Length: 371
Image (cartoon, helix red, strand yellow):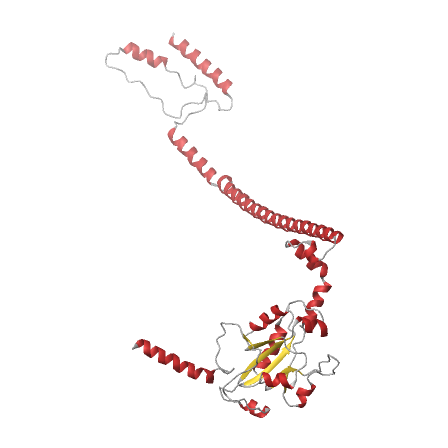
């Protein structure tokens, strides 16, 4: 059941497709356009002549307006594609046929082409706006060709096309009311592309030599080949020198950045070192506080020492008399003690020699009294 439903849905889509698609019968854009049959257009539906007003109003889905556009289409570019897009959209329901002239006819009436006729045919087949390609198209359209392919209208730019001894090859088409005009795209044409190549011939010849083409394939003489190859080597050397210069500039720039960063870091470190040094060894620094504290601790731990020759600040201790000692020894000790008159005044700490002499005199008088 599901398969049948899917099949019915596909049939319904195929029936509705021509009504939704602008170019008549729906044709997916996954395949190139078809080639026109040599026998012409064949259809079961009778082909009636359409007026311009009828074509603009729109036609039934099974009767699209058959529009024909012709040209050489050498070096197929965006200007060609835009012209075909205009021809495709000139009517609501359009079937676009594109005629491409052969190499023989083009070389005879216009000039040599870059692309062969087969390449030009294939380029048109892969344009999204083209429904059918007519190979070996005539240079001038006649009534027999128009009837054979059931052509309703011919699309081309409105500028008179002088060729083959005629002032305008589309003159009779315009008089018959079968002509629709398109606009040319300014700034690009096949002649412009060829002019660019001819103008920069040396550049493109050197380019293709670099890519592996031989001088014979490029139709370049021996001297020109050597000249082009020498120019290529010079260009390579210039490019190498330019690359080295850019790299060296970049390297120097990086070195300058790093050196500036290092200098800034050194300055910051030096400022930090100086500030730390001043905090430690300055007048209000921690080092002086440590020295003061250590001096106070040393003074507290070490005994006080009096200067030489100066009398002791502490009072003299008398020896205690033992009970076993005799009165004679007591009187001797009393007589041995110096009298106040015999004691010399204390000498100042600034004169140690005078202190020694006075102490010697005191000892001598003490020994004389003891005798």
